[in-house]
Structures are given as structure tokens and as C-alpha cells.
Amino acid sequence: MNTKSRWELIGKHDASTIDEMAKNFRLPLSIAKVLLNRGLSTIEEVERFIKPNIKNLNDPFLLKDMDVAVDRLITAMREREKIMIYGDYDVDGITSVSVLYLFLKDLGGDVVFYIPDRAAEGYSLSEIGIDDAVKQGCAIIITVDCGITSIHESKYAKTKNIDLIVTDHHEPGDVLPEALAVVDPKQPDCGYPFKELAGVGVAYKLIQGLAKRLELDESYAEKYIDLVAIGSAADIVPLVEENRVLVKLGLKKLNTNGLKGIITLIESAGFVPGKIEVSQIVYGLAPRINAVGRLGHAAPAVDLLVTRNHNQAIQISHLLEEENKRRKQIDTITLNEALEKIDKEIDLVNSSVIILAAAKWHPGVIGIVASRIIERFYKPTVMITIDNGIGKGSARSIAGFDLHSALKKCADLFVQFGGHKYAAGLTIEEKNIPEFKKRFNKICSELLSVADQVRIIEIDDEIDIEDVDFELIRLINTLAPFGPRNACPLFVSYNLDVVGEPRIVGNNHLKFRVGKNGKVFDVIAFNLGDAIEQLREKRKVDIVYNIEENKWMDRNTIQFKVKDLR
Image 1: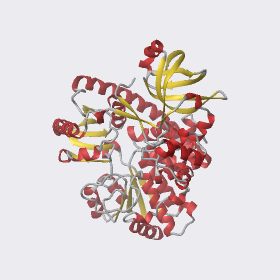
Image 2: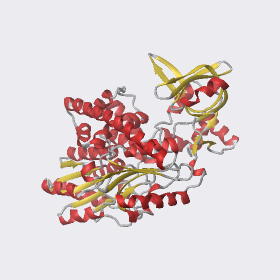
Image 3: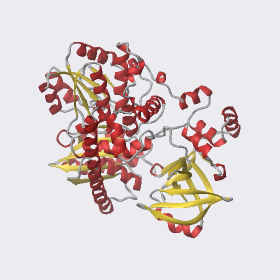
Image 4: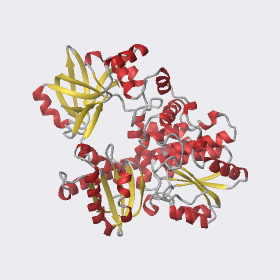
């Protein structure tokens, strides 16, 4: 059981407000409360939430420099100038490159793409990539999902007579790159009303801007919106406002008329085409798309997403499947080594952060491992791999802690760093790592209280399991897609009977049944196998859980997916 968690009911709504909401919308009280917890109370707000529309998106020209970027690209296409799209090697970057590449190609643009080699070039715009653009005769480089901190590289591009257009969603530094246009909603002087777009979301706004300026039909910009959904979901951005529109409509496109490469990948992953949800993107498709970029070069992943050739799609999907298996093996080895170092080096009682450094850890998996460590110990975590005196690090945060701002206080120790509130990357000389460990731990200890380091489980409502049925599940599903700031509704029920014998399945997962007054439900509790003896002894349990429909062998049942239990 998770001993470092606190259960909290969210939304302190009075009973009369919940009753009124339930009556107005003819809903169970629990669903009315969920809607209120999401900040929805009027018919217009609920309608817009449940049925998002492309017309709900903001005008792309509200983004600073969007007009400059659009005008330059239209000129380039008219004059047949070559354009390079330069992206990051993660899913957000790969989908950003793919969606913009396909769109510009459809307009007749002379377009190439470039993804940096993680090991040789590192993150963001590189001189090697700029030189490649010169070699290929490119007049323009458009960065997607990167570039906002590429100050030196932007000056280098200028010396090569390259017009640079930066599109990014990461936090800018104190100085912006010297570019023809910088399109990033997080710029301090950008008045764009929604700041939480993924990199692929910003790339999509550029597409919208081009479509609008060229007076194309609105549907033209939506042609590849399934890629926008995949990149946004994979980057774990808040699924509210514009992101909700893009992901909801993108999933609809993916499940009805998805791109050939994506459908092939879905099939090779063992999923059912037409039934893809956010969780399957995050835990199934994204790791496969990521795998080649983590262990080698990400270009094949772009090739997969843009191909219209069935045989090529099958070949690349097979490659991604094999690379993902290899990535999992490296993950496991690295995690075990990290846990050994924590046991030997980290005072978990007095340390507010976990910083680990080792030679030759694979740079492509340290971010994943950092996230796994947070799952276990719930402390901000930095994993650094050292090669030839240079450390490359991936940092991950916990809820409510602004990792980027904290790292900024150590900026003088880094060769470079960038990212956002919950994830960041950094490069540091090996000799500076001891000082970084000391200083960053002090910074985190000052910013994080003991209470901050306890995982809070936010619960929508306490319900009676006797009220759970398939209609409740149907109503819950109307609130999808689920993700940050629109989590799948989480309920709590107390003093339930443990029915039958609990058992361990898979890798320390717990299966059992709970009942009350004769009504019994199946339960799956991932990574909570350690609680089995207490369940067997006490025969009573409190659970925090999602309610889902479980389909197996043409039989539909209701299952509780437990997040925590006592």
C-alpha cells in the first residue's frame, strides 16, 4: 500500500448546488458533483465540454509573430524555396514534424525534415542540423517543439543566411533566440489566451494560420488532427480548453479514418483500431514512437507517420516494436542500478530531491526511470548520465512543484537547460555535479514542505457501490478524454467486504472482489500486491477507484480500478 498518500475530497460544494445541478441535467448526484469539480455549471459550459468544436479554438493570429511566420512561409512556397522542419526526438516533436510536413507537402511546398541525433547532438537546434539545412539548400528552418532556448544556434543560423522560425511551447529563458519569428505562447509578451499547448498544438496553430491566410476550407487544417491528438496526449499537457478540443476531435479522426502508419502501429501493438483512448496512446503508442529516438535515431518514426505505403508502414512498425522491447530491457537494468544507488547514497528522510549520476546510463531512458523513481519515493528526481566529462540529465517533478523555476536558480552550473514546470533536460560538466546536488537539494528543501512531499489523491465523491451500473459508466465516458486537469472521475467507498480470496497477478498486481449487501464487483489494484495479507486477514477494505467496463471474451462486466486502498 502507498503509505505516502493523503486522500482528499475535492470541490466543497453545498448540497443544494449539487441537487440543482443534478435536477437541471437529469444526472446522478455523483456525476453532477464531478461536473462541478471540473468548474462546469451552466448549460453552455457543459455543452462545450462534452461536445468540443473546432470553432472553440482561438484565432491563431493572437500568437505573437504568427503573422510574420505565415507570410514568410507563403512567400517560400510561392517561390519554391526549400523549407526544413526541425523537431525534437520525442513523440511531441515527432508528431509536430509529421503534421507540418504533411500539410506543407499538400500545399506543394518543397519540404524536408530533420530530427537531431540524441547522442551526437542532444536536445534542440544544433549547428550540425543547421549545416545540413545549408547543404540541402534550405532557405528556412522551422523548429517545432524546440528552439526557444537555442540562443547561440539562432545566431549561427543567421550567419548562414537561414531564416529561422521558432515554434515551441517550452519556457523561454531571459533572452529569446534571434529569429525571424518566435511563436511560443509562453513568451512573456505573448497575449495568447491559452498557454498550455503541446509543441504539436503550436505547430497546429501555424497550420491554422496558413489555412486562414490562404482562405482554405476550415476542414483542410483538420486533415491530420489525429497526429495532434497523439502528440498532445503523449506530452501529458492539461486536457482542458484547446487541448481538449484537439485531443477529442483527433481521437475521433484516429478511430474513424486514421493515417495508414498509425493504424499499422496500432495493429502491431495489439490494440483494436477504432477503440483508441488517451491511456492507450500514453502507455502503448507513445513508447513505441519514442523508442527509436531514445535508443537511436527518430527519423523512422516520422517516416511511419507520413507514409502512405502499406508495406513500408508494416516494416517500420516492426522496427518500432523491436526497439521498444529493447528499450524496456534497458529501462529495467537502469532502474535497478538507480535503486541500488538510492539505497547507498540518498538519505530519503532528510533529502527533498533525488539526484543520481552514473557513467554510461543510456540518455534515452533516464527520463522514464526518473518518473518511475517518483512513483516509488515521490520526490523530484534528476537522473544524469556522464560521458567524457559531460553529464546529460533528465529531471521530473511532483505535483505542484515548479521544477523549471527551481533549476533556474542553478543555471550558472549548467552548460544549458530547458523544459517546463514538470519536466526538464540539462547538460552539466561532471565537475559541477557535486555542487549541483548540494545546491539543488537546499533549494528544494526550502521550497518543499513535508506536506508537499506526500502524494495527494484527489477524490471526486464518496459513493455507494450499490449505485454503480452501466449507465453510470456511460455518463462517465461522456467526460473523456481524460488526462491532467480532467482526470477520470475518482470515487471512494468505505468498509466494503472482501469477497473470496485475493490473488497476485502479473508484476505485483492485486485482484480481488468487493461487495456490499449482496452486490459484488471485480477489483484490479496495480502495484498493490503488498496489501494481500492484510486483505486476507481483515476482510474489510476502503478503496479509491475508477469505474470501468471490462470486456473479455464477449462478456462485459463492471470493474473497479483501484488507485489506493486501506
